[in-house]
Image (cartoon, rainbow, N blue to C red; front, side):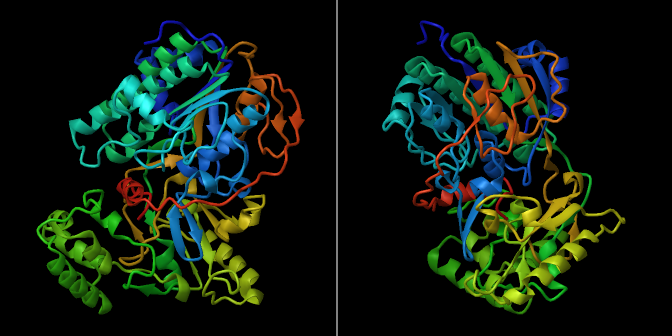
Length: 544
């Protein structure tokens, strides 16, 4: 298929989602990752501090634009319009990407599997969208996905949702292989100046197979094989390996700010579906959207839904039913056999419109005030807004676990954390968990504290390595930040950084100055409105 090496690629960016030293170093020491090891050993590397919030849909756009979420506008997996929400997509990222800036300078790119890039823009080169895209995404140029499938066989964004056990590991490996084969095919076809290939399964494996060291090793070995083949066939002058955040185990507690706020009279709840659903957390990744068990007849399901909703109206919510069934060993049976709509009918949720302040999405890391004039049914007068925000900062800063450990390492007004034209889309009060060792949940009911719903959590320290022409191997990367990756990559290609970028060129590479670019034209935002994407995010615990 590939009859010649590509020698004209200036810079290759390899994205390893959740990559970090605690995961990589044991694999390096065992000799499991020769290709990635060669990049780290021949160049310079260090920890890469992530941003707030350190999750895929916000952190990758920050990495490939070089700006904080207040400038690009994505704070989590969900975008909100009043109390309504949708999964974010590329139209929510309102800042120029690396490949768009390079296009302005006459340089071509091939981008494969970058998160939040659907629908793709037009550039000189190719774009195959990744995470949050639909299973059959639009690609650039038109018809590219069909070309890829004709050339390499099957290409998928996600594994089948029913893949389990050893089959799930096989799918992880297949998805990684698809990324590498697609990238090499496109690099051969388009001969780009810049290449970016991202591997998501290095994160997914921790969410879906927690504690399975063999599965983690298998995923990373698959990534290393693809990286090795890309290095051999594309021969880039400079290689950058970077992650959006790290990964590690929880040792702390699960804290439920909405339950905390409810006890202070700020949160009102409902069982009528007006708030964010919470059944997906209870189902623990086992209940499939659109799949019902023995109660899947339409009439029976409708009757059962009304019955569960009625019980919820007198305080018997599906959360409490699940906990009660768990005590007698029947919880998993309920998960497998209760239809999704029935479960959600009985789930106690935050009533956004009736509450004064609430957590709408745990990934955002913060509390939103239901402000008059801003929210559709705002109940907090503008003259009370500052006082309420300050009170929230004060009271949340003092929250401790039952063991006496602070839950948060920082609680602050959003303007003290973010900057830019989209700060108002952030939570009004930002809450940063202590060392990301405390799990935050938007659920209500069953107390303020519980064991973590997930055993692994994103951590602030990711990884960066730079190798190749003009890279100073003795450079100090101890202060490297996520925002620094984009200006550094531009510098490796002789392109000045955008003056709006929050990051700086890392000292391993010689800077070439900054340049002012026209204001970004956000255009019309496009709805994702894809139940399959939402279900996959729920599977991973990102949508509760």
